[in-house]
Each structure stands twice: as structure tokens, then as C-alpha cells.
Length: 630
Image 1 (cartoon, helix red, strand yellow):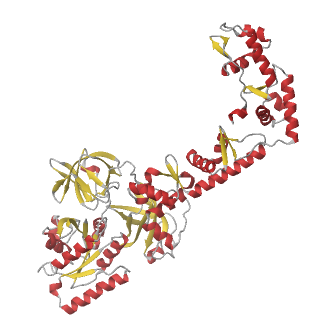
Image 2 (cartoon, rainbow, N blue to C red):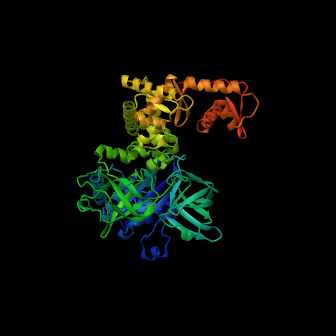
Image 3 (cartoon, helix red, strand yellow):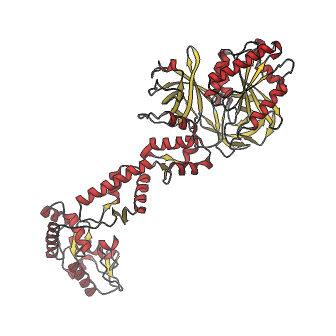
């Protein structure tokens, strides 16, 4: 677990860390010379009933708030340090705002330098602290007067920290690993070392990791915690990781170490943003912000409109960043103005992989749910992605849940599962409505057919095959449609020819029969009777009156059976007959002969041998109709 300090400059944060841990967190020569903390400091703290936790000492000067944000990100408990002499100061308020924006769940207040004031003044300062938290609409924390110089109150402060951490939830270890880098340096004989707070998951020695945003793959050479080598770095702890085959120039503060290829960076994301009303009133697409996310700091712009009426719940926005970030659903960030430099708000990532489209405007309670619930984020992203779907493999990172929670979240969302993607119920319903429309229109247009060709239906839907498959499957299981081979139709539907259709089909059958072994082609029949001919021919085929021998030609069934019978009668089994001989036997030209022979090959009546054919001894006349396949 991690404790992070916060508070105004010179209120005694570093001195308090040293009094609690015995470690001077000011490590830089300039910090020693100036007497102020400039960058992050780290120290282990042993607490009864909890064990060893990490302490992050952050700078209090307004010029170094960016470092404070880095240090406060990912902590479990904030130790807000307020001088009993001076009370609440500007950086106290800004640091508390940052803690609030980052969603730090627990705060303990240390009233330092209590040995320098009397009891009456101490009581006033305690009341001021309570008023600060009431004004910020935060739970009233435990306030512990103490002195780093005399040691007074330190035991009570340790107890307060232990009790607060004892009630905190343990972070999941089955999550995907992520560690924002807050320091990178070189150790002689070891190579490049990165340090940070492990936000999620766990990492073992010798594992392969990715350095984002570069995406470079490297190996974990060694892991240390509080100066000791360990085999596993777990969520909620500080870690120093030695990386093989990585130059120190290839990683820096703001980089992120991950161990899953599904992590990717983004420069456009959607978030619930909460801004100071004063800046919200002047916010435009040209307004530049400095965004602090994890250990990264990047320039950013809000590319969608910000609802100026938004109150505590904020508003849903789309944010574009100057540099890529490794974000996850549920991540919190802080927004600051570059000039004059000040914290103006923050927010929660809703969809790290946004696309440019009109944004909805959820109600206040919906925004709260999106900010707090991975289930709400999944439902929102599924609906927004609509027919595109959401890759199931992306869910843990995109919505911010552990891999083991995905199945339950998907079930709660009502999402439909495809081979690779998840789809919102509303997306499937829309496709099902399109299926109904296309099938109904096809029945009107082609009343003699047994259904819509599946390929025709898919082309009409104009959605991903995975989504089309889901809609068709659901409708078939519900008994709404039937799938028969390559055709799809309404359940129970059958062709119902009109008197006109019957008359027209009889004309076609007559012409085909009259042609005997040289019937007219489909094209010739279309020129005589019009575009309804293909449907009428399929109708005749289902009735068993005609048989399709080649793509563009049908034969009268009785005529075709007679031709096959003659072939079997005239040919000697086992003897090879070339086309010229067969033409003499059957008495019709090569134009009709070759397609007829190929038909006989397909039906197993004849067998091709070189340039000729032999009659198969056990062959029977088998003329399947379309109805047999439907």
C-alpha cells in the first residue's frame, strides 16, 4: 500500500516523513540547498497490523504541483500536512482539490508544529480543517496534532494511518499489469532502472513487458522494493524494475510499463470532465489545458462542447492530447491551465479509444454511474459503438475491470457475443428489424422463391458478418425465420403463385418441352417473357417439371430422363466414348452435348476418362430437384 503526503510548502511534510520512517526524502542537492522539496521522495514505513507500506513525499511549492500530481496518483491514503501555526493555505486547498479529483479514498490530516502553538489556537486550527472538508463536501477526516521536532503525537498519527489502511480494499492481483514511470535512471552494472507505483496486476522477474508509448518490448532483469530484491511486484506497492536491452533515453517520467499486448496508447478519449465554473464559462475548442494522467503531463484540448450548466456531476466531453497516453476506463486525471498556472478541474476516462461522432448528453445520475461503474461504461461503449461492436479482448482495459470480471459484466449488460466482438442489444435489434424488412420485400418481389439467398440478405444488411450472424441466429432460435441451405425465409412461409404466374410457368414449360434435347436458353426465355422468368423456372424446378442442366439452360424432366436412358442403352459399360461418338449416338450438336455430359458426370451417370466418357455400370437416374435441398 502507498501513503502520499500533500500540503502547502514548508508545512513540514518532509520532516514528518523523516520522523515517521527515519529516511530523509529530500534526495536532490538543490532540495538540500533550498530547504524545499522539488521532486518526489520515497521511504518505507512500518505500521502495526498493516506491515511495510511505501511513503511518497511530494513537493508543496506551487511551481512543482506537477510532481505532486505524479506522487498522488495511485496512492491508497493521503496524509494531508497542515502547519498548526499557519493553518489552511493556498496549496493546501489546491492539493486537497487534486486529491479529490484523483479519487483518493482516504485522508488523514497531520497538524504539524503543534508544539509551537497553545491549545486554544490548536482548537481553532482543527476547526478550520473541519470547515475546509465541509466546504469541499468531503468526509471529515481524523485530525492528529503532532510535532516532528519533539515526537509528540507521532504514535497517535501512526495509529490513525494503520486504522485507515486496515479498512482499505486490497487491489486485485489478477488484473493486467500497469506501472506509470516516475523516475528512470542508470545503475552501473545493472543498466536502465525505472521506478513507480504499481497501479494494477503483478509482474515477475524475467517477464517480457512493453514500454509505452514507444511499444518497445524488453525483459525484466530484476525487481526491488524498499532496497531489497523481490520476485514479484504487486499492485499497490512501489517498485524499482531493472530492464534489459533498454537505453535510459528510451524511457522517462510519463512512460508506462505494461505486460499485455492489448494495451495501446490513445490521443483521443471521452471523459466526464468537471471544471471550475469560472473557466467552464470561457472554455472553447481553442482553450489549451495541461492534462496530468498518471505520471504523464501533456497538452490537451476539449474538442466537444462543454455544458456550462454542468455542476458536480460534470459533463461528457471528448479530449484530444498532443502526445499519446496509455489510458484505461475509469482512470482519473487532473486539468490545469498553462497560464496562469492553476488547477481548474479533472475527470474520469469513460472510453480511452474514442471516435469522432456526435456526443450524447447523459443525465447527472448517468454521469455519476459512468464515473464509478465499469458496468455502466461497458453499456455506454457498446451502445456508442453500435454495429461496429467492441472486441471482447479489449474490455478489461477499455472499461477498467479485471479479466475475471468480464463475463459477469457482459452478462449484466445483455450484450450479444460474436466470435470476437460484443454487440449492444439495441444494435442486434436494429439488424433484426432490417432482416424482417429485407425478407418481406423479397417475398413481394419474388413470390415464387423459397426464400432470400443468404448472400443477398447480408449485402442488404451492410453490417459486419459477425453481427449479421448473431441477428440471424437469434431470429432462427426464436422461431421467427427458417434457414434452409442457402436460403432464409419467414417461418412457415411457402410460395403462393398467382393465376398469372401459373399461366406464365405453363408457357415456359411448354417451350422447354417443345425444344426437346435442344431447349431455349434462360436468356432466350427472358427475351420472350420478361424478367420474371428466373423465378418461374425455379418454381417449375421445385414442382419437378424441369431440371437445370447448366447455368443458362433447363430441360423438361421427361425429356432429360429419356436422354439419359438412351445413353445407358446405347453405351457399352467400360468402353471410352469421345464426344464425336456420343454426338452420333445421341443425335444433337456439341453445343448441347458437352453441358449434358458434364451434368451426367456430376450425377454419377458417366465418368470422364481423358477426352472421353465411360458409362458407370451401377449408375441410376437421379435427378434431384431444388425442393430436395430446401
